[in-house]
Image 1: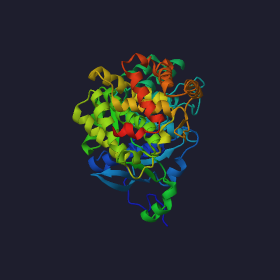
Image 2 (image 1 turned 135 degrees about the vertical axis):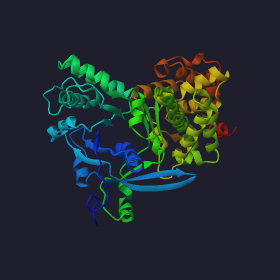
Image 3 (image 1 turned 135 degrees about the horizontal axis):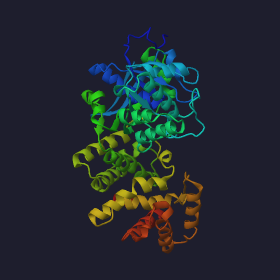
Image 4 (image 1 turned 90 degrees about the vertical axis):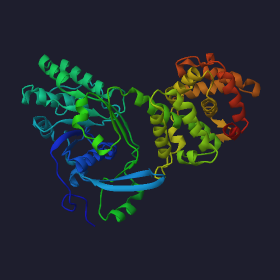
Length: 479
């Protein structure tokens, strides 16, 4: 059977305008897939040079396929399960800076280069104090970028039109701001000129971003069937869900040069990404965290089962639309549309998302994802959100490690588990449930505040917890 490469497949070549740090599944199924759409639909003519950010990666395999790979996009479309695939051809070549340092640095001298994308994991945008200008390469991603920018500055004599647009995809807050800060820190430490630092500040753009697409990655267990369907061998097949969102915060110049909107891609250009970050955290992540302890104690194991269950499904939808969405400040229709997309994502038949895989560090997740909605609901409505209070009670029950004879694997820091064991040690009968709840809600290390001062919350959670411990959680869901 033929192998996927540019000899066996009729593909296009493009001008190398994008430098990409990272060749993993997410960038290939997210950013590169979008670049492919722009190349196909609006003649973006943007080729990608993929750079391996660490000393082990997929660059050799990518080059063996001439940068080509197949993307499967799976999800719900117009209420139906849909799976689509295509060959993405925007990556022109891959570089390993650990063996091709000069080829990497030569990219700085290209007048066509305009964009820099990255996904070097949350730990990638970080300062390492053991990097120097003489390293070839330095270990940290920002240090590699600093040297590239300095070479570019010198090559073009500080030309104001030869700066780059950075669009990082790392999952850290203010990723672009942090990348620029560390680059300037290296420039200062290495004694680079004031003029260079001024050029970095004024003539390069560092966007902050929010990225959202579930990318399960390489479908190893399905490759035999996929290869038969495709009719060729592809070592880099990648799967992604249909939903995608890229929020890019920065000057209008990015929107003018990056034609995502013309392709109807779900890319939002804004001067303030915080409402969108809040929307994602509260609705998508918040719904996950809200459902986990309740659905699991109810007897469900997967996210898809949760939203399709005839009893629990309406409950979680009401929690989202009636208790979470009303606490957010974006337009109502926009919130409803996003929430409907979230529910379609939860229903995706191509993703088997186990509730227990989401349960990791549930206490800290509840604090950042659900508690703000609960407190804001009280502030705006003057009453408690019933379903979020049920979730909080189920969370406390969850951390007992056993409910109604069902053993629960707690995945959290040992200090959290030790506290839960101590709090639950005071439980003996229904009369002592209130003390357990008070212990949890007053633990300021968990919540950043004492939740027992929220009017009625302790009593409401205790009442819900009593029902849960009696094995009647269905009663709370259906009442």
